[in-house]
Amino acid sequence: MKNAVIGFAFNYSNEQIAPFLNSLNRSGFTGDLILYVNNKSRIEKTSSLKYNFVLINFEADHQALIIKHRVLKVLSKPFFKSVRKVKARNAESILQNEQPFTADFLSWCYVNYYLATIRFVLYYNFLVSNKYANVFFSDVSDVIFQSNIFDAVVPSKIMAFEEKKDVMLGQDEYNSQWVIETCGNEAFEKISSKNIYCSGTILSDYETAIHFLKDYIKLMLSKDFKRKIVGLDQGFYNYMVSFQQKEYFQKSENGEVIFTVALNKAEEFIIEGNKISYSEKRNKVPVVVHQYTRHPEVKAYVNQLYKS
Image 1 (cartoon, rainbow, N blue to C red):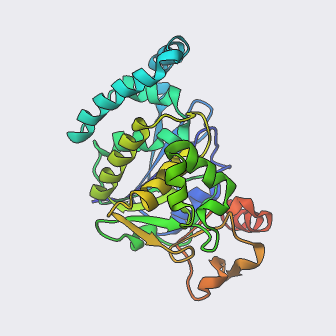
Image 2: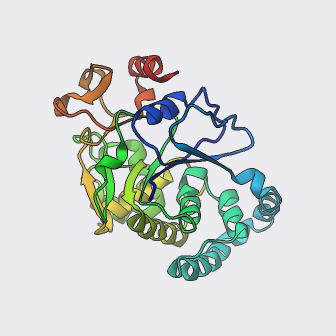
């Protein structure tokens, strides 16, 4: 059975995500790359890729329903909380039976929530009808692969990848806001001294991924929050890892499998033999480097390696 890498590439072109596409091609991956795109995306399949390329344009597939829910969003704004509760009850039954959601429900989510927050709803809907051995949910614009990510799979576990080890959640303004907004001050106080885990790169076997996605969707639909804020998926994810402490999470130190670099300093990078690694893990080349675009020199180096 094949493995799958799944991500969103809204508004991007092949050229803009060339490091992602080309590094994945060189990594030894031969499964399916599933990319969600929109009408502004300029991404085409190329014959030089070793993996199978699947493009899903949700906007084009459900244009009429999206327009409908944009109108209803304005008309029903005062009643959103009541509508959400009804949607949550209906979703509970669908998730319990591991069935796909209706196009109408997905379009409602698409219109009413920020894209990153509901990407896991769309991932669930795809995966519940398409079985794989293992899956990797990944950001696209700032990720490169240095080897095959699926060599790092831990059976029956979600690999939760740590960000910078010595920066706690409560020390980072953005992560603090995301947890408070999604899950409240009480939850934040209990996990503010915990490490930050990144929702932009998640590795799992198929069955555990479905379990996680169901839990995430239930949590998202149970909460009242400012729905159009960027980054709230990170708030939910850290709540699940550190507050709920779901048993399926396997925590992975930064730089072991994935080097998540936004909070790291320039001197903490090692670049040798066309590979990027973390100075604290000097003898370990991570499989994936994430958020490299936050560092101009590293970004320039990556573009040089993987633009073609």
